[in-house]
Image (cartoon, rainbow, N blue to C red):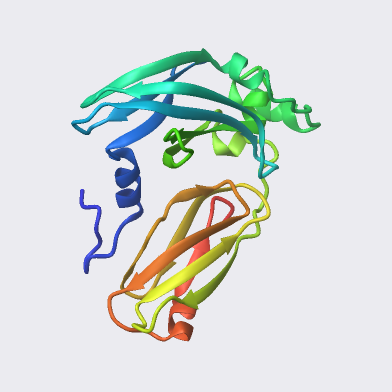
Length: 231
């Protein structure tokens, strides 16, 4: 299966592949019911030391973490993927104080879980250098999106400006009122977005759009659509 459309336009899958094959990255998986494993991958030839993994628990209704833990002095041996730590989901969520909402009971039954916090929160992990620079980020939903509680229309807004005199580089500024799942950008014009198919967990995000040939600002504005899980 090709990650490119006819004419060279990138499919959403190509962005996920790019994230999944970063040379240095953090990933997380629920390896058995109720147990999370955090992995660190280093495909380079040089071992890395003194990395930091930040594990944030975030609600769907807010744009700030409700709890955060950091693991320091993380090592990433060259050319390996290592299991850094395994953690019970319950332990990770215990530090996040979330009130049970009125509509959670029905969704709990549908989800098959008995802990309402799995429906109201998700995980956001950052792998950082010692100085704080983020090398890799990933997310882990703890339930299916249709069972999420507190997830609402993020009311995505976008503004566009031209970045240089070439007429080929444009800066798209996105704003959201709440967490936006699976944000998808599209354009009728031939061009490449710097990122696509992402989660928006902060109120603002900047994306670059580079067209295959010079275009006017108005032409590019009319061509771009912004969608998320809600539409």
